[in-house]
Image 1 (tube, helix red, strand yellow):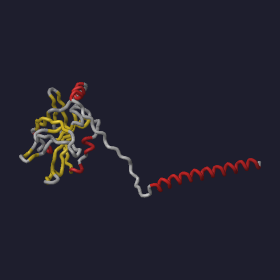
Image 2 (image 1 turned 135 degrees about the vertical axis):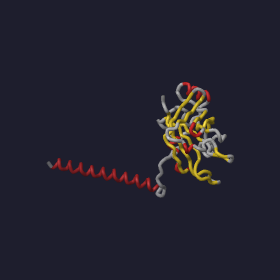
Image 3 (image 1 turned 60 degrees about the horizontal axis):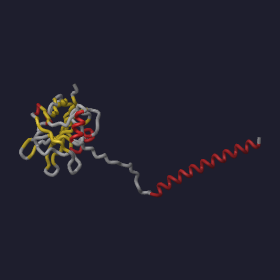
Length: 214
């Protein structure tokens, strides 16, 4: 009986000792980590987005052949008298979407989706220039339900307008416009609001239209 009590006592002592050693080790590690950089704030690691791939003309033709999508060449919006050529554009020096070189043309963001494809087909156009109204001067007047057509030779993709919104420049939902999505839609963008000689236009008009699939 006495041997069993001794064995039990020894087990309790060993258990307490192991717990103290374990807690002491954890405390030391935490204190040590703080002591190495007591004033250094915690920061989550960050990563930049990968640069989008630019397809060669052969790759684009091959991709178009194997799907219903295509590189848009013309934009038609009857209600605001838009029937114009589309220029492929990339990024400007500041990393933003570039604008078309001709104020009467529309720019298609070549790193985004193609016409008819899943994703955001992003198109931008000028509101005006020194000579007067430009191609998207009346973009804010688009009615809900209006049809917007992208064309290339005999290929056509038709979209229905579901949203026309005006945002302050710093409130434009860039993620919704440019990010990957399972929707098949286009985003039409132009300037709006009061103009400042140093800052440019204060606002942006963003029109969203969904693909009509047949």
